[in-house]
Image (cartoon, rainbow, N blue to C red; front, side, top):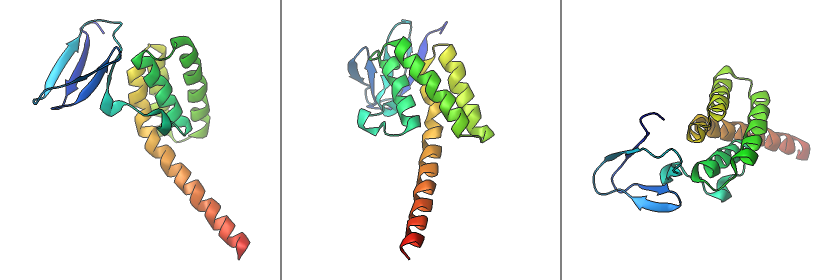
Amino acid sequence: MPGGLIIRLRPYEKFLVNGVVIENGDKRARLRIKSQDANILRLRDAMHPSEATTPVKRLYYAAQLIVTGDAQVDSARLELIRGLESLYEALPDPRHREKIEQAQRNLNENEFYRVMRALRPLIAVEEQLLLFARTQELKQLSKAIS
């Protein structure tokens, strides 16, 4: 981040800086954060711990904890490495693998917010796959009962 981290905020949008919630005013704002070691997260990008119920969401949440400074980088990094490897095996589609590879590159560069951004689209993919699996399971169960 040679020029610093730039955050664009909507009116009244909240964000977290080193554990403190700050709210933007009534106009759009653009902030440049010059400190390298500040822990910053827009709350619209935050995931509640109770939402981290699937593999992709758990990885997203692990990256989020690093971004907010609530996790030790080394242990969370190991979890992310293992999880991304598992995802790569589970999602053979090149479009999905591209996102996983991007998350891995960001992880290697210690860009944890960008890891979150790379994983975000995979949450929807995962939800679709889980829904399909449940539908197939219900069809089989229905056949077994008939």
